Length: 141
Image 1 (cartoon, rainbow, N blue to C red):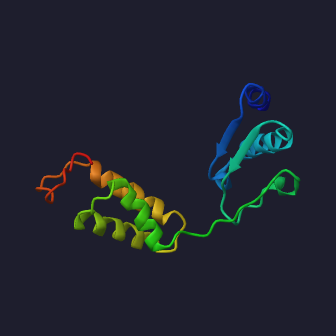
Image 2 (image 1 turned 45 degrees about the horizontal axis):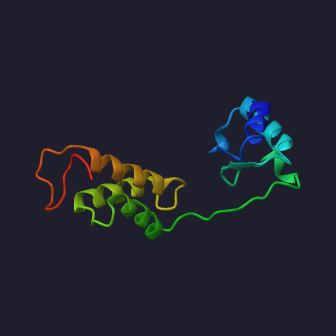
């Protein structure tokens, strides 16, 4: 797999994204170790996301750069959710469901705003029995 990645990069730059590596199994981590070691000098950008408690073995490589991102504020999470509605105000029912989902997880829990975004998308796509607010359709946005 590493050779395939480097082979692709011989023809055009490659972006390889690996998310939530803190949950990766040992075999996947071994593969990432090989990728990080071997892509140096190739037009490959490897983006790896993980939680702060995970200690990746490749941080000592000179071609590895780490960026620490802070959690989103409640407002930033709300802005992300609102981006799904293309500038239209969310119905109160949807806002309440998102707030309840985030509160159940804890306002500072990892992934709470992702859950909020997913909840908003699900609620906006789900048909409802009640009449939607003016200017809205429950079957899609």
